[in-house]
Length: 602
Image (cartoon, rainbow, N blue to C red; front, side, top):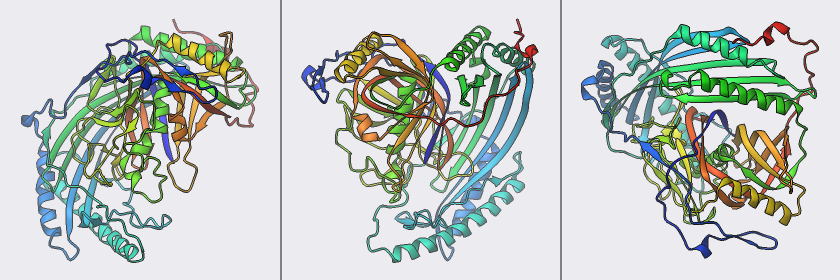
């Protein structure tokens, strides 16, 4: 099961049209089942404007760290020896990541978290055998995971003292080599028992890359931020809220990567995020919460007090409305997924299923493995993933990176072209028809990299203003003779199952969901989840808005948690299924909170 956690949402609604091609008006009219009416969508693309930064931008060879030289020297020495071993290693890679993580959090006007930690982690990849068959191949018996790489972060000392670093690299390489030899033995044994063996190779060779990025610095005024967070969390305790929390997370990351192909990469960057959260337990036991976050590349990119006050107002007003909202009932019918919810929809329904390694995994559902060149969506809709995008419609994207965690340049990858599936996100694990990486091998320290999403973008050659999209929804409500339609404006997260041993289904957890009645009246409801299956869901899309919105967050899967974004227009979906969400049986607190915590700080 692949899990997605939404950490923040930003909207971007102003830009100029993208330069995609168009089709004839007759081709773009999407038929609906039943009475088979036609939706005549104008040939106006959704508004997308991006700024990008190529992997080679900012190369600064004079800023090379001695740490990179030590990694390179030891990599050359070790691979030369291991190639002559009884079970030869053909590939060796080191990635050393140094992270400083600062976390400050206040609740109810008081500081509750104040941490500033730095860690160094080493990932060592040793491949034994050959690119055609090596120790990383999955065993046919999914219950036997003896060939899976161990989840372990190598410990290396701080600083750039050569002998201590080389000693740590040597010890970790020796451990990993012996694990690889053992795993290859299980792979060969497994292959000998199979009547049908895969001829797909286990690894793709890629050109060596050399790139040096200057060391970044993390600068912020701690005392000022502590004061701001205290005031913010005190202001958030309004209305129904019994919890008001404001926090920041600042990171300074420096990654050094070398491999036996000759790649030498030094990357350094900072990131910052601000969160405002409120919560309360409803009378029926349901936990209610609202979260707003903002992301930036530095602490200075985070919003000023005036915008933070607006964030507080949004979460407090929404929580009060949710507290009074009725529980919804199961529903099947037309719905609108507004931009942020639409982004998560594509991330879950589509994005995880076009990560390349899933197309060759016999334990995966491989939903789209046979759909290359076939229609999976309306012919006016295209999708691509581009980690090189810095901003989209003025919003910084969380999924930006220059090189992936396998030493390959980030690049734009077309996935859907005018409704047809045309590609997959690839790491260095080849699949039929896609023999090389396109720069999407990603992971968090201690886990093996696999193909993952970066900046997913949905673009359309036909669109309507959002107000017209709501009119189209009401027309569809009447046509289907439903008592109401649904509009989803915000979500808390979602997950999707890609295992062949379970239904190929997804679930998205909406926070702000509205019924819209034929007379245009809207009613907020709570306690529901959106569910469905990917092929049906994608083919139920009928129209898109001209406006684009972006969510930023982090995504969890088998290679850990990585930052991502998804940008999409609002979508009119002909038929969407809504289920009741889980409500815990426990009751709200018996006592009222102390009145003193309600005092607003001015």
